[in-house]
Image (tube, rainbow, N blue to C red):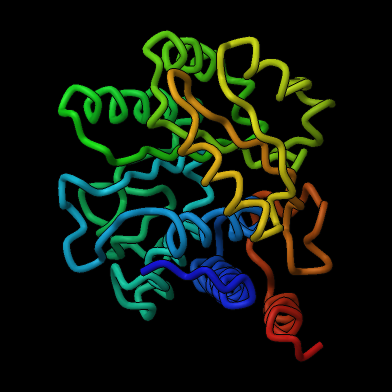
Length: 275
C-alpha cells in the first residue's frame, strides 16, 4: 500500500487524531499532546513510505519503526489499527487491565510493534542494532526511529547518534518530533537542546529540517533520506503539540492527561469539522 494523494493522507492523519482522542478518553489516561503532534509523520511512514505487510507483521524483510517516545503510543496504535494490523475496536480498550494496548508499546503482544519502548532515550540505540543487523544480512530494508525533542536531553541518544554515524548506518532515518514542549514546560526552560540541527550535524548525520505537518515536505524528506549514503539521516520535524484540537495546541498541560466528557466532545467535533 502506497498512498501518494496528499489529501487522502491528510484524511488518514485526521482519523488517527480522532482515534487518539477516543483512546485516551476511553482509558481515562494517556498522552494526547505528543500523539497528536506526530500523527502526520506516522501517516506518511505507514501509508506512503514503509515496506510492511499487516497480514505478515513479522516478515524479516520489512521496514522497521521504533517509537522511542513510547508514551505517545496512542498515535502508534491508531496508525497500526488504521493500517489493518488489528481491529479498530481494540483501541477502545487502551490501558485496560486485560488489553494488549498498554500505556507503552509491547512488541510481544501487539502486531506491528517492532520494539518495546517507554524508557526515554533508548529507542535510537535499538534502531541502530536493527540497522546494523540489516547491513550484516545484506538486507535492503530501512529503519525509522521517532524521538521527542524533550527526549533528546537523554545522554544515551547522543551515544547512539555517535554510533550510528561511526558505523555509517545509511539505512537508518531518525525523526525528531520538534513540538518544543515536554512534561514540565518548553524545551528551552527544562534543558535546552537547541540547536538540534547543528548538534546532529556535528555528530555526522545528514540533517533535513521540515514542517512536520506538511505531507509534501514529509514525503520529500523521507525520499531524500533514501538517497544519502555512508551516513544516517535525521529529519527535524517542526510540529505543534496537540495539533488539531484548539484547546490542546501548544498547551503543556495536555502532555499527559485525558479530556473530560465535555472536552472529549469538543475535540471530536473539531477534528470531524463539526465545530
